[in-house]
Image (cartoon, rainbow, N blue to C red):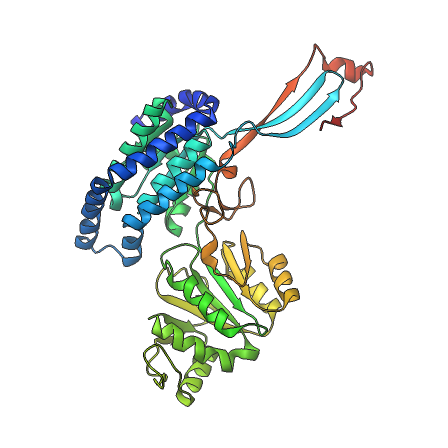
Length: 451
């Protein structure tokens, strides 16, 4: 038996105690964690500095570096998430069905934890805090494996969180940490003891997890998010939303990667958009039609900018290249965006459902009928109207935090918060009833739902 399997066995044993813990006890653990993180913040930042320095020495990609940084802002965010979690109602013990099958034979469906959850994530120390706190609140045991890029930050965060949870009265094995890469494969083999795997990382990373375990996997591989700019839109609002969706956190899976623009407004809208994207140092990858229209319009026009009135924006100023339709399945995670023109909303919907990753997609329009059609027809976990794709987040949804985003359709979809971390069991209360009496006709069901 491997070390990871031994850990999983102990966690499975403690999962029953964790499931039976009170909401007051779990909230007390969250309070201790928040207090400890604040008290030891300088130690955390010092450990994170080691990871950032190692990343610089090893030439880690900029998108990854942004994710692994853990500063005052991210500490404030995770502490706000802990507060929000404490204020949420207990997700356990909720009665979702109460039915009298026959007199004296009553059935209830009650929410309960999933059990032992293995969470494997890359370069996101704030994710460790979010995942651990959500698992505590939902009564699950969590086996956490972070990326090697954040080994120092993860180690101190885990110690502070685990020690706080145990000091509050939760079982010793409510949280465990794996650090070596070999432990990932060991974890994936623990299908007898681990109930669910949640991977957070690159497409290749998530695919590897899905292909190498018998344990159910919940998550998403890609974040190819779209914004469709309809002909009936406020163009200035559209540009503001697009810039936010691309730049507010470029490395996030809910950052926009593809813009679809109605052909009817392309001549007017593209040069405005290109000027603003250039100001934000965003590279444009467009179809030949997009490139031609953008360059023609920019050469024929000048635009005001924050740099001063009368500043000329011509085709030489913009970073733009031509791509084909085959290039619209790329998750850039950088200051790059793809642009394509479409004839109507139905073409936009077809493109998104064909080339998207079913994560989060938005329409910018003042036409309510078009908005409703888009939101009904686009097959994604998040479908938005006149707002940034960056809102796809458990904290912003009021979930306290999230363990990840699921683009699947079974059990949980979208940002996975507390509801996604519980399942249910059926409890049947009787007084000596046997099935034989119902099979013979001596007794019969009346299936009456109780108030």
